Length: 427
Length: 198
Image 1 (spheres, rainbow over the protein chains, first blue to last red):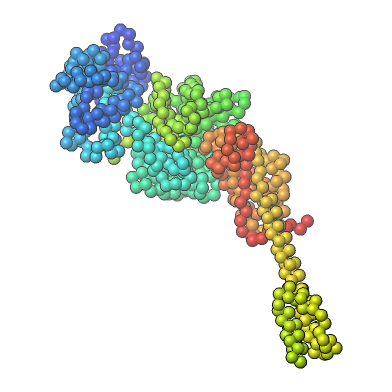
Image 2: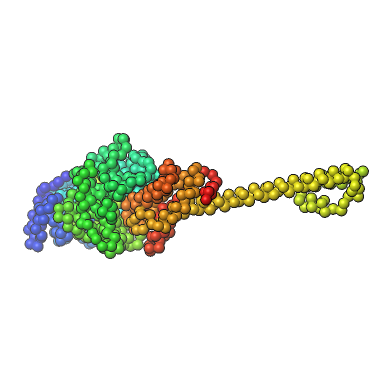
């Protein structure tokens, strides 16, 4: 739900400020709103009434903060009291806090009522009801609040938030998922040897590989049941769904190297795509339009990133061929906007996360602390999750590539191979 | 007569008696009526039984020795069959030491056609989990290819990668990495292993 009126008002407010950066005009960025931290629109979440009011406010406030697109202004005690005293928005207070907008959330018997106020015009910019019958503090209840957060972000910036997403990963020989705010981590597969989870475009199923016994399986999240898609002798690695959701592309090999294959979800087994001639070809990632596949290949003698057409033809080396000691580029993930491929590269004896721009092949190193691996893009195209050893054990971290802000997503036993989900609908 | 009967009974008893008992009877003083036919018959019968018993003990001991030798052979041969081979970083090329280890397995496999071997390929932890699974597969397949080139039937060998999931040793130095870059061998079937004829 876009809110042109509010966005125009916010844009006017920002453009009016003398020190505001100029419109970057890149795709997805609205006029007058840039991703410069100094120009993020200030938003005040007004105190929420009711027994769960503080929880509701904390969850949405945190979502807006983690989204990195708006400045979720924290009210200190006296400001909160002052705001709560007013029957409607306290305009002088909001102006003093530098807020461009204020958000009022009101629990109702059937869900949550949302009102958004434009501080500059002192008018109501958005009113909407979010029905929810979920029990307070349940996963569905939190999910309903995340949807409110995502709609708010879309109203403020034109880009829907990523609060209603989850990250799948491997931990202790099971597939786990965790909400994008770090809450609700739980195993979703039976114990076994599952690795490399990948989300179906509709978010309802996860494909994964196993190595003992070897095969590719598809896990239905609602029922918790897995079914084997392909198996047999040799090795099965790194499945991903095709963008249309109808097939899985994966790596497989027995005696003659490892190549990329495609298998339909409706059966019929696998068909080979890549021609590796005995080399290893793994870790595929589709371009958003589904026409190209980035993958890792050892065909040049060491691991590098390549791209090819979805039918396996027109292979190109993407990463500039490196020389020196043990060059090693791997784990490509194509960004949702199609502009970048994130990958990991051996730098000074450790893996680090980089992006390569598909237009000019310019490289950008995003990490330097510890060993950093397995990047996976959020659907907003500006957040990445990856595995890092920066605090000792292998944990998932989230990086905002625009601001460089980094946060830890998982804690506890070591994890690997994260996959960020698409935006998830109501459960 | 009563005494003779007693001696005969004792002699007969001795052939079914315990080893120590037998020795006691043989070493006992000669019976009073040594020239008696019945006594000679009894003595020769006792000697025959004693010899039969000694022979059966020897046979049993020989069988035991053979079984022990067979057990030793099976243990020795299994140790050769399960000896690991090692690889260089990011390589599936068989080094000279790896070829020597595989060459020692070949005659045993050829002499024991009922034996199958599951070959698993492993890597150190340095690469990515996904690439390491591919690399481990390449190593297992390379080993299998070498063995089949030496005449071991393809159907007796399986090659499977476990990537970096089962390190032989923990550690983050080259010594640990080297021990983890390996292929392992799990023989099955065929019963006791026989030595190849040299």
